[in-house]
Length: 179
Image (cartoon, rainbow, N blue to C red; front, top):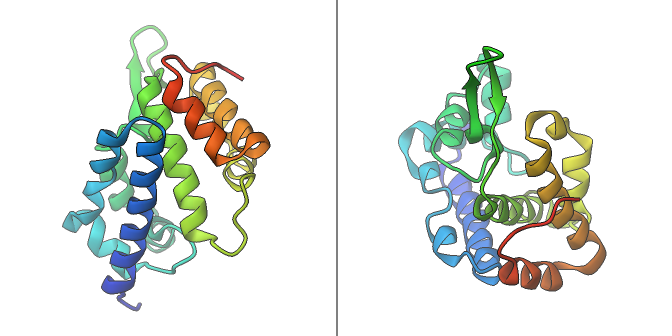
């Protein structure tokens, strides 16, 4: 197994700077400044460098190797822009269920998904790429219907109207609509 600390550092820094840029344009610049700082902690950075591939999250490599990703569990528990952060125990059903995400974190999730698509697929990125990523997964089953509807609305707007119009809309929106 190779170890690529510099390449991993450059990738997460490029991604983070893109998120910061997008967050400022979306009106949530302060959040952008604190985006993904946990990736620089040892529990996340070292596996990231060990499983670095350059074209996908190193967490997938850690999962393939160990059957789980400790780095991902650490990351999602500290970063509210991940829908997986918003899970709780339902006292009635006795199940772990998704909770509604506040709009400011849905906006950051949008910026994160766009930046990830640009970072990991720079040659093939289009404004439809983040939407296609959402639709090909089973994300709908893992978020509340409102959270999913809001991120879907933003990603559809990105695909149809472009980045500038979508970020302008986000900056001027107090409450996000549901697709």
